Length: 111
Image 1: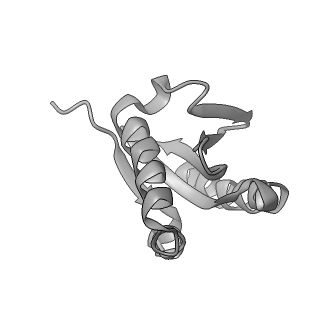
Image 2: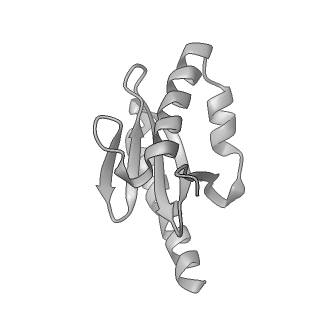
């Protein structure tokens, strides 16, 4: 059995992929490194890479450029990426992530 976690995008949208594609080469490389760490460590990833924000919401922290990816854990070994941004949009991004997390939790409860 593989120890790697499955990464999915919120509602299978490509919003985060488009955001990632808009980054410069060095920025994308740095964010990809953090995502690989998350994929390998899952719920064992801690600061300085990951921070729990409460109520099942987590923040993946890319330190070099200040990018953040907000995520949650789902059944099995699944991580759902909810939204992404940088420190300047952090308050809005956290609000959006919490709204999307509510949708994920409602869906999980109905299964």
